[in-house]
Length: 336
Image 1: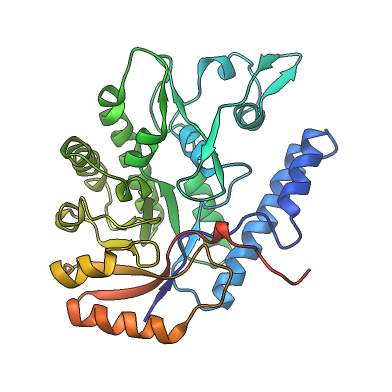
Image 2 (image 1 turned 30 degrees about the horizontal axis):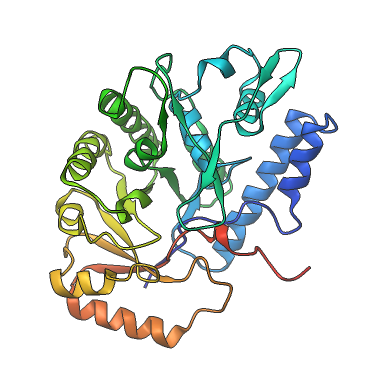
């Protein structure tokens, strides 16, 4: 049975990322030195997972500050007040993350909210009328190729368009329905480029699917992915959910043209029942989130084996053993 990790902690064994960023903010570290620290951390984290025999290792789960903010910047969702500062891309990013007070101007950071039911906080994306929604960055592609150059095949991880739109604040005249199609086409552009680069799997995280959904929410989700999935080329697309079950849209998700679906069997109260009652498509891969991504305790392998056996009774699909969510929410190590 293959294994998959939804996401990996980025802070570093000795909190190297935190200290490097703080030095950069104090002008004690150059942008080039900060970038090298990030490269060293990414390689260490990919290597750790490879040496642990993880089959599907995530990339683009690294962030200087917040992956939601990374995704917003990737698709041009940068409010005009930050663009007006005329800073470098890195400093404009940090201005959105933590504010900026200097010779170029004075702006507050984007607001922060709790990331679903965790103690992690994310920067709330803001979509104003000046936003030109398109693929304007290369971070997922760059980090995939960076790992590949090191001899490590990864699955690029990107926060999905449905969740991004539902997390965002709309501060202009445009609303969600106005930007859905342009954003989906930008995601399709990214998926096409990752496919051209040789990514075997691409993971789109859609935790918003575990919330209470209405018919119009499900219709939006279908509309977005009809456009995105058409651009996948030879890549296989994994829809990853976590922090609950997808009882409101299970049948709809299973009917769509995803190659793999990641389900949370830890916090997903009804996930096992949904699969047992409705089955799971034999032509898709089930990424079974059976290893708790938020719990500090060792995994109970006996229970995991029993859960996998029950899943094999419910479906003929290939099963991949996965974490229930990103490991961002657990300590990196107790060694120190």
